[in-house]
Length: 308
Ligand SMILES: C[C@](O)(CO)[C@H](O)COP(=O)(O)OP(=O)(O)OC[C@H]1O[C@@H](n2ccc(N)nc2=O)[C@H](O)[C@@H]1O
Ligand SMILES: Nc1ncnc2c1ncn2[C@@H]1O[C@H](COP(=O)(O)OP(=O)(O)OP(=O)(O)O)[C@@H](O)[C@H]1O
Image (tube, rainbow, N blue to C red; front, side, top):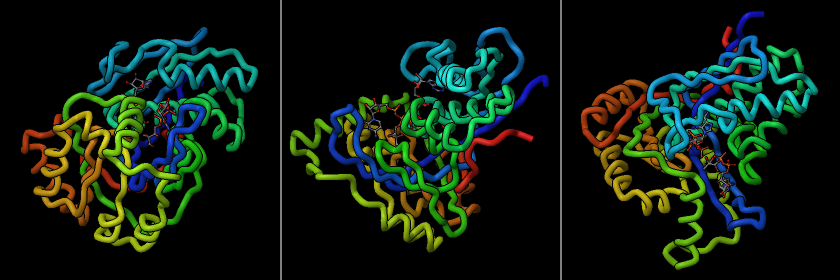
């Protein structure tokens, strides 16, 4: 076999209820993940030991904030080592990741790459890990990685790693706008804790339940979905990056049904009434000078899959 490729999607959290900080350093979540049509691709081939090449739009290789590591700390490399150890095979493969998902944007790009790597190498090495084993390995790599395998629409509980697929009626159309530099996920969770402790946000006993957004997704109406969107990390992300308020406002002015920060940000996810209006909104927002990158996408998209 020469090479094999798998791709995995970016996500938007259409509901992100965050509970108090747990003793293990994570927060209890009730989240609803929506996979959208923006994919990274991981290609694997023969090699002695592991090697990694990173390419793609905005894929700046390095160790700094917002950069993609080109070494064994990359989630692609870590996923390969983990699967090899689990299956008892030699970790021999050349790995190449082509990034389309913006880095440190709250779109779970690194998690998508880890999920795609598990799927590609499981086939390439013939390790035949079962679905449950792959989900377990994914959870060891990061809270968002199991959802990268599952895709579609799913409820995430625990620290986000326990995923249960849910029904949704039809698709939704979004414009993703990325303003300025990336944001660090731990920094945004830390800011939430500080804001709650200082009384700038109410303290919570547990994560906000996701029922309203789940009902809106089942119904399939963009207006209902827009009214139900929740992200507890939006206020801390805006506190760290004041330009995000202006970016959310720009999405509203361009005709979004509703807009929210995606995950830990700084991506703004603007919900459109339909595909046509998403294309129009993307053109308008690209010209507004607020965003560095603008993409029209649709959800739900499939989870990590081999590319035929
Ligand atoms: C913001 C989200 O993208 C929403 O889906 C995720 O919660 C983040 O998931 P992720 O990037 O896969 O995060 P991980 O790699 O598991 O954790 C990175 C750091 O984020 C914080 N973290 C993450 C998940 C969680 N439920 N509580 C947390 O407090 C912790 O400081 C943790 O050390
Ligand atoms: N394959 C990868 N692609 C991108 N970043 C990676 C990768 N592997 C490791 N990283 C590291 O992870 C950091 C966060 O990248 P990522 O693009 O996954 O952020 P994110 O979308 O905000 O994550 P999330 O939404 O899951 O919190 C990067 O700054 C980088 O240091």
